[in-house]
Length: 108
Image (cartoon, rainbow, N blue to C red; front, side, top):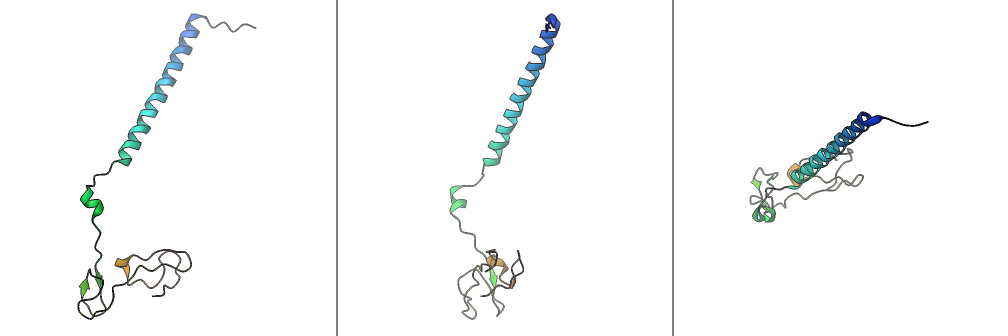
């Protein structure tokens, strides 16, 4: 059995193959663009080195960003780690007494 498509069949196959190759090229370009855009960061060296100051409210009512309250001397809250799931309570959420991930009571 012969597979004789003739010239028009061959041209159609070439055209279909060219479309497929172009489609793959376009997909590759789009993936590269997406990867490059996703990795760009608009941060300066000063921003990278800057430490984020977290404010906290002491039991005496004073808001502070230092290690100790300037009103009563109480130490700033620390980042607590859940003993069960290892979730870390953020410093700015020092009023949370239970784990935000599993509900286990956090001990200070």
